[in-house]
Length: 336
Image 1: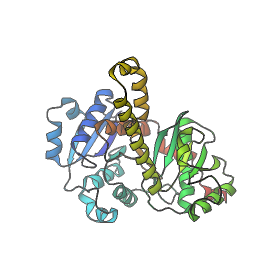
Image 2: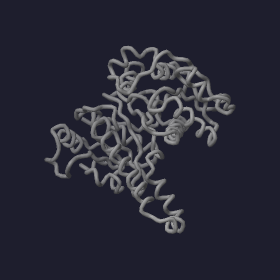
Image 3: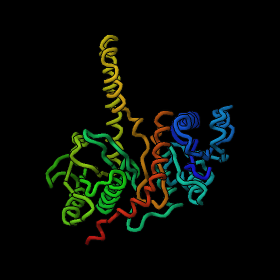
Image 4: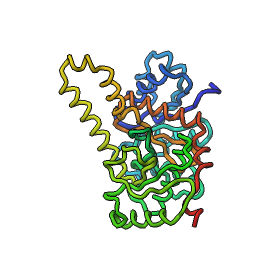
């Protein structure tokens, strides 16, 4: 087990937990046995789902917890009463060096607050942010924040730019990622005051580890002309769910509109197209800005999507991603 990635899993977080969580782990183990799982949650419910699965039993351990943080609880209320919860215990377990990384599909706001209480932030960073990978015409975009911070000021957005650029460089070895602010137009006078202030700061900063290319509109995120897209958590989460809903709409209606013969002749192309648009393939966002690694799975994803978030956990640890991000990180404050 020494060579395995040790993942602390909040087995009670998200919809259809713990069933979805256990099925996702089972899918992951059938493809890759390089992970070991510490499952935090109701022991009886988890055991019921694992049943007689010898593979899962051999690669996991259950840690019984007393409570669950629900999706409708406020982050502060969840943090106050959540010290015995599966989410708190999973993060605390990693903090105490018993696991390499924590994974949860639970309440995003609660996860942010608990992580801020238990873990240190990277020096110079004001708030952690949720960063995910989105497909574009050429490769992938890093997009943040995807829902951790509903309200952000210009300092936060500047920090997100630095962290997003550092993540992109760490993943794709790009010397100078192109960074853009998500906005309703391309002109400098468009958007709210925080966006305008952020634009002004970033334009004057002359920071050397990324190229600030200005604003980008939502309909051009996937064009492949930028590498990192920055926004507040409210807008980012709306954009994420809109993109997921659009992808599902396209694939479902395409299938309905084609007859069996046309599907047969174009099966390979349709399968590739559907895979490219499948939101589950990109599930698993990284909390950037913390000294310790946390991955957030979409709460409404299924077991296939959760298995992909496990894949992200393995990649984060094997690539030593947190340390790479820290070494690539130059905050805009450093340049004033």
